Length: 123
Length: 331
Image 1 (cartoon, each protein chain N blue to C red):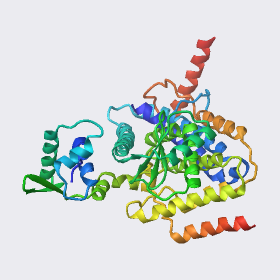
Image 2 (tube, chains in turn cyan, red):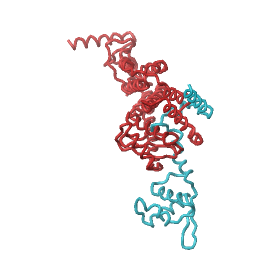
Image 3 (tube, rainbow over the protein chains, first blue to last red):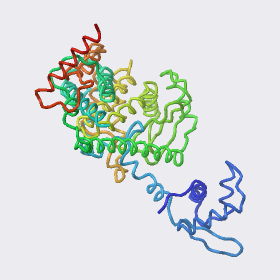
Image 4 (cartoon, rainbow over the protein chains, first blue to last red):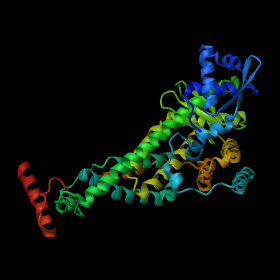
């Protein structure tokens, strides 16, 4: 998978909002909110996405129907999965956490802490 | 380049001693002083790591390593030069990597973040901005790829929230916590830490220190968030901390690295629940500053030592001769 350029990403984002199949006019309808896109460029973007394997298309009667092959979640994970590993609070990553990884918190640890807070309430 | 390398190496060794001492004394000092004091103390240490220049005395306890270097590296291609090149490459690599990752992150936020503009969120935001006195334009975004709330931006801050169920009270506490980070300009502090870790990447103490300072940053921010609150609210806040982690749990297939280890979460909660009055220890920060400045005095003054001096014995003489010259010049 490759990172999509902004325009193609916007088209994919529009497609993900619908139940497939999706037509070019549906995409256009979704995009028209922000700026006006000529229908021809939307069609071009759609065919580029088909080439890249993000969409599958079918010709039915006069219309071309598009089906997403890559789900939003999969693509999201492709683009941002590594951040989840590396980012913490306050926007700057710290290499430390990848070098000296802390033990993960288990549910029992959290229960224990919560219980401790509860005890403070009663005392 | 070799002399810059030696300057930073010397700084790395002396500051590591101070940082290690500070770290060892932290549990003791935390009993007396606020987390904010501890945090500022760490910032002094970090700045000490970044700025290698110190006032020098004419006599030192240890001959300066710079002096040793200058006498030993008369030939063109020394091991020191190689070490210096490796050092610089590491500095550039660490710094560039972190900035690149940050840039990628900001781009992902712009692409995937969904601005939250519901009346509920806006009302909470307005209220908390009033409470914290933050007048800048703040916006709240929801991002699928983060597991803990965070703050982005120095001028027009964005508060980023992970996708999770949060009650009105939890939202207010989280937003207030992030607004206080913004008010205190903690991102600038993060930048200082980033710079220090890049410059001293080979020094394990700097990595441990950066972890310690992040914890103190969070603890002091928690404390400021909970200023003038009662035990009940503090309990609620602690439970929010735990709740956020609990909800982040299902996503941990992706998130191997949630920001809180058990120990640091515990420290944060203990600190939130601790209602003892503590002092802001100006004295502690002053002592750290003096120690940091004072590290230069452990070394002999190392300016302009004649290169290629014969042997170890001769070196001392050179230094003394230098001093004589200085004195004569000043007379």
